[in-house]
Length: 270
Image 1: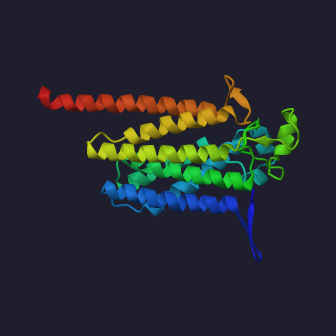
Image 2 (image 1 turned 90 degrees about the horizontal axis):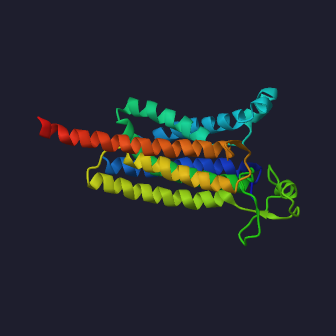
Image 3 (image 1 turned 120 degrees about the vertical axis):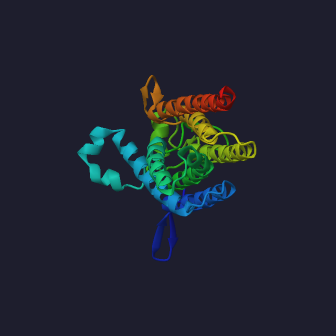
């Protein structure tokens, strides 16, 4: 765990550095996707605005998961550098993308397709920031050889281990690392789907459908070994949001396919 990099008199938070890295790398990926789609727009501006909006959304969603604690002492929770909810970030970034796409006159589904691989890579790199800062995004205790301990984390593993009936020096699942590898894999799959869609002139929106379903499944599974409290039918808030993401992706897929079939039949009808 390396929460800060000490460079002389400067103490640089690793979480902030990883978020900045995530936005930069995602911008390059989006610019590459724009290039292959012949979209003339500034990917760095779009990612910058959507990324910052996503961070705000992630923070607000996290603090509002415990409204009584938030309203009792709101300001320290709002400015804390720890605690960001994936679904809140998705909602904030999604809203910003809709507005930016309209401003740039890019069809919404086309823009969402182009942004999907970049969003996955950005999320993956951001999770490394969570790991380095030890902000409590780890999983349940484990005896697996790659288990990790965060005794000095914001949410120390020592307390968690004792609460779970394990020794105080136990190790836990490094779930941020799991998410890093899985989201990078999803990004690659979505990029290849995008290439297929463009090569075979498939309708816009299919890559985004894949993003909703694959990331929803991945986050749902990761939450099984996370320590988040359960609320909806024994699921955590993130799992409930993941189910909603999966359902939305499936429904959108069938809507796109149906509209494509109807459009294909119209010339014959004439």
